[in-house]
Length: 328
Image (cartoon, rainbow, N blue to C red; front, side, top):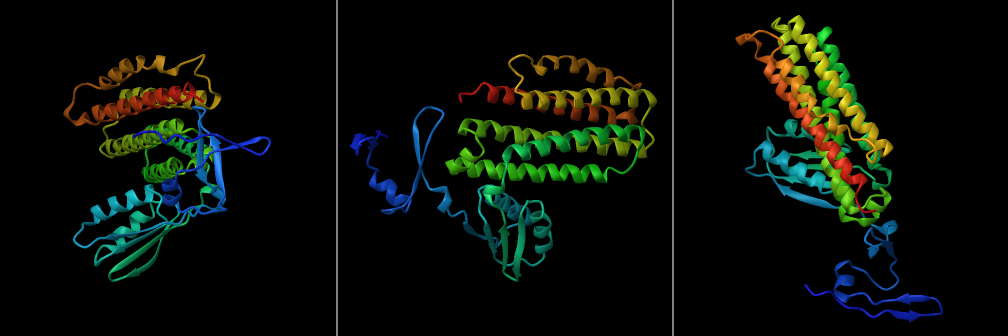
C-alpha cells in the first residue's frame, strides 16, 4: 500500500498543519469541530486518535448458541470478553446450560448475568478503563503466586486440603484474563496505552508475561494437588519430603528474584537466568529421592510440574529483559 503524501501547511505565526484523509475521517465518524488527540510514538512519529474524553467504550455483540455445546459457548464468551465487549447476549435455547454458563461468567472480573429467559442470556461487563492499572494487576498476580509457593511448601509438613490454594489459583486466572482484556483494549485504543505509559511493543511483551504467570500458577496448584493425593495414600517419605521442600523453595526464590529485578529495573547488572542450569541437577536429585517403587509415581509427576514451572519463570525473565531493553 502506497503511503498517502500530505504537504505541511504553515498556519498562523507559529503553527503548522496537514489535511486528514477523507476516508479516515469517514471511517471514524468524525465531523467538523470534533476534538482529536495527537501523541508522539516511540519511533518519533505522530499518532492521531479520537479524543479519549469522548470515546464511547460500550460495545455489544449477539451470539447464536443454538446447537452449540456449553464448552463452545464458554470459549465464545472468553473471546468476546478479551476483545472488550461490554454487553454480550447469548441468543438461542439455553435449557440445561444456564447454571454452567453462570459459573464460568463469574470467572470474568466485572461480568454479571443481568437477564435470563428461555432463549436469551444477557451479560454485562462493568469496567472502566480509567480505573484499570495494568502494572498493579501484574503486581497483584505476582504476589498471589508467591503466596501459592509458600502455602504449597507448607503442605509438605502440614498436610491439609488444598482448597484455599485452588481458590487463589483461580483468582490468578481471573486477574490474567482482566490483564489480557486491558492489553487488547490498549492495543486497539492508543490513548489507553498512553495511560498505562507503555508502547505497543511493551504491551506485546506484557501479554506474554501475563500468560506465563497464568501457567506458573496452574502448575503450582497441580503440585499441591499431587502432594495432597500422595499424603492421603501415605506415600510421602521423609527423604522425598525434604528434597521437595528444597526444590520448591529454590523455585520460589527464583521467581521472587525475577520479580524483584523487574521492579528495580536491575537487568543491566544482574541476570537471575544464569542460575537456571543448576535446577536440572536439583530436579534429578528429587526424582531419585526414594527407591524405585511403583507406588511412588507422584515423584516424577511433581518433578515434571516443577520443571515446567521453572521453564516458565525463565521465559518470564527473558521477556522482562526484552522490556528493559526495548526502544523507548
